[in-house]
Amino acid sequence: MTKPGEFSPDVVELIWIRDGGACVDCGMPQVRERRGEAFGGWSIQHREARGAGGTSKGAVRKNARPWLVLASNGAVMCGTGVTGCHGRAETKDRRRAFDLGFAVRPGVRRPAEMPIRHALHGWVTLTDDGDWEPAEAPEEEAIAA
Ligand SMILES: [Zn+2]
Image (cartoon, rainbow, N blue to C red; front, side, top):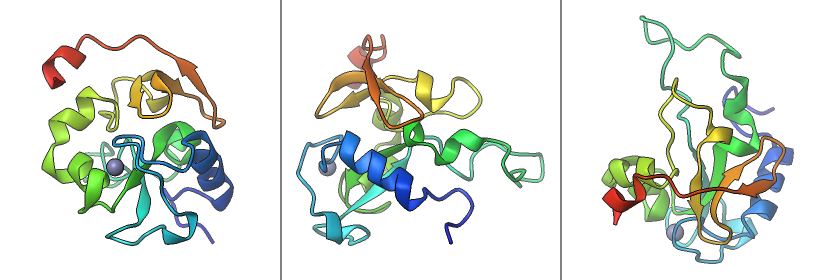
């Protein structure tokens, strides 16, 4: 069973194909079977974090944000939440991750509406169903450079 907030195997497949089996940040090709390996492996970045937002008590109402598990919210990144580009986006350089669309602040715009600088496709928006569309680079790009 897929845990709440986790991408289902079908959605993982959509994301993997859309991203060409490569890290969306550095473009490094990944090996399909090595998902979850900290070094030499890959994982799926949640652009809008599962734990973000929610109620005053910090709990997120179940299914309150159904888009969290759609393809628009996931991106293939090398490493894990603490290694590789995924680790950089999650912890080491959060500001850059927001500027480049690898991370999306909750409550402003949905992940599907926030452009991402994709190693394979350039500046795009990611659709909920696993496709992508060309997008304008946001003004913030200059800050990230
Ligand atoms: Zn990478």
